[in-house]
Length: 93
Image (cartoon, rainbow, N blue to C red):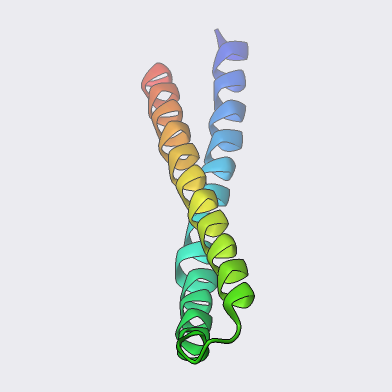
């Protein structure tokens, strides 16, 4: 039984570190990267109104969508890992 508890404890530590990784990834995307990209959108939208930089705008839009996709994937991974962690903690107790 002790080996099983040691195994679960190691799994909990590993899962918790993954949980922290997904949380940090999500925060970096939504608190750092996306606000900078939105600011770049604001800057290029005025030049698009003048008829220039349409390709820059499209490229920024692709980057924004890719970041949002990564943010969603990080959130999904976070909640899946959290559920797994809670299940393991329930096994230990």
